[in-house]
Image (cartoon, rainbow, N blue to C red; front, side):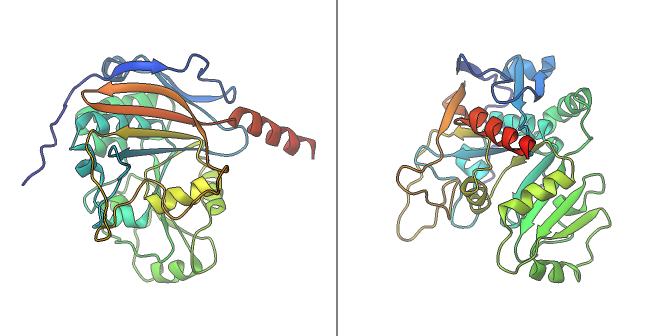
Length: 308
């Protein structure tokens, strides 16, 4: 059956709650975003801004999950199947992509979306011109840089995410992956960065690439193992989570993932987040969380760095 991708099309999100002290500058004095253009404000609200980290790129994650926490099926599909192809979810994805200097995505996620590119224009085409205009007003590059993280270098050079000539691409990989990529004939606009090693790409290497690309704000869209590495390193500053009103379930015969896979915090050492805002679209909830205590920890680190 062909999915109905028009579900909820054009629906305005209802703001239910905003944390009183959650101002745009709660973490630092710098922020990305601000007043939304009218065509976007009528659907989300008047404002969307993300505080920028004082001493490293800010990393924001965006996922859609079922009520019981499933974000991906055994075959790697997720997204639309989880949200019910709910168009407002893709609208919010476009908003967040519009704010980002770079979008970080794992190679597995790329392989399971063979017709996609990680740009605002592709995720919600009805608002492509609105997203483009907002990026222009914010002084951002026409398209965010796509950062594909892969330990093995297993990517398709013809994939739209790597072949669109106007979208800058960095493939961040290991020494083993770099050797494999050298033989693939990647397009000239695709840069391969060798982070060393053979088994995995360390979270610090992601930060290094973002710095090299002058990315003040990066959006991570998965997969769950990539996000787990960033969460384990305490690098995720905000989480935008769409909660879809369905229960997917799990069993011994299925392999359904949550949005963090491969990292388990010890008791008492979980990553606590503060709820920043709640929007409602029909029966879907759009939750925004911010890393708890980020302002205190980051100011302390910034101060320590400046004193050395």
